[in-house]
Image (tube, rainbow, N blue to C red; front, side, top):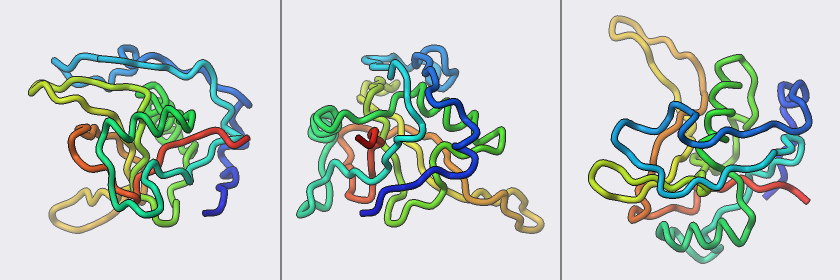
Length: 167
């Protein structure tokens, strides 16, 4: 896979940004608990790599525990605080993550693990989507990133990636 270059709006960001902990994001659903939150100390936005899938070349999918192990070994980024940074920037018209990543549709954020109301362990993810906003006529706000949560017992497919720092 090819490495992603900076989008024009990334070039407007400071070289490093500070990430907040999950509890300070406003993104933890009511009643959920934060099991672990390994917040990045700082991220150099100029060196982000969106090409690493924790699935091996011969695997269509893996499950959550294996994904967490592989993401840690790959020094993956991606806490709920990182999701907050991406979503806030997007709301201001700036893209930290390109909205076109060939063959990828989800970015798993493995550094935060939460427990949902049913007791399942979950990780946040970002996914690409379009949102149609009217019942009487269709208009689209465009492609953008949305944040969701993924249960760890549900397969993580090869089209899912984690973010790393290019060396």
